[in-house]
Image 1 (cartoon, rainbow, N blue to C red):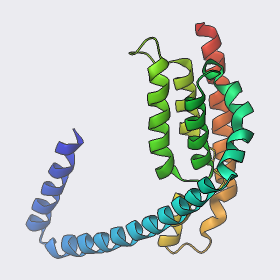
Image 2 (image 1 turned 90 degrees about the horizontal axis):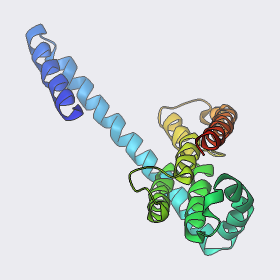
Image 3 (image 1 turned 90 degrees about the vertical axis):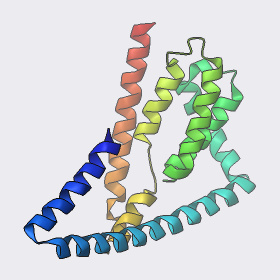
Image 4 (image 1 turned 45 degrees about the horizontal axis):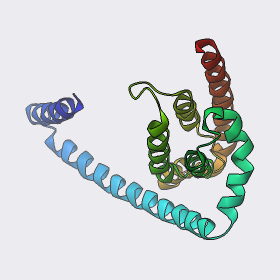
Length: 192
């Protein structure tokens, strides 16, 4: 549907700009937007490279293993159905660590891999398991200590204090995670 809407909007915009005699304004806006897009993309690319590099260094040290062990009691509480599935628990912990560090781009492939691993043990292939539902809730809330993407966007837009959103992000993501986890646990118990 969007493949039809966006081209239609673009074509209608050009037709209207020609009729109203404002083709120069459209062209100027287009080139300014392209310049801003390239700048934002480079900022994101630099941020992603930096944090993926830090994540790779952490993976080569024992830091990721220590963080995974730290998260094991939380994972065991949130995912009681996965007690025997060590691979899924490791993938979930890696995803949670990436989200906590604000590496949403690195967390996505880890989350997909965790869902695929949980799907292998799912007895009803056309229905989400309780663990899969909980994982979606946690991924959506995604508690972040360092919201790198938002900071990168604010930096690229010349914000005076791009890191001023850290405390509100902590509050919002923690509240979202707690509410999501509590409601999911309640709904899972009601369905059983």
